[in-house]
Length: 78
Image (spheres, rainbow, N blue to C red):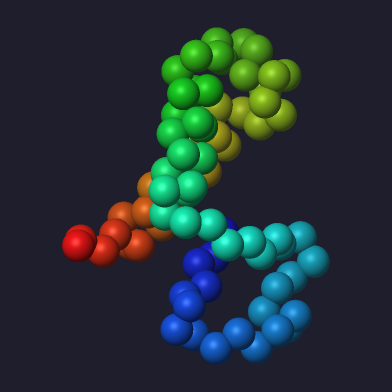
């Protein structure tokens, strides 16, 4: 996961490798996604987590933590 900042000029396809997707979302939308991953970690038992979600709990925790890092970096108090 990489964060592209709005003030950085976009060069184009050379910045995106074949297995990456680029999309835009608000900070609030990203917080919803991180929260949903956290809820899944709490609600789904370890023995069925991979079967139901397609990733291990460790992979889900890593993604949630990375999303939270992006949220902290993007925090701008009003």
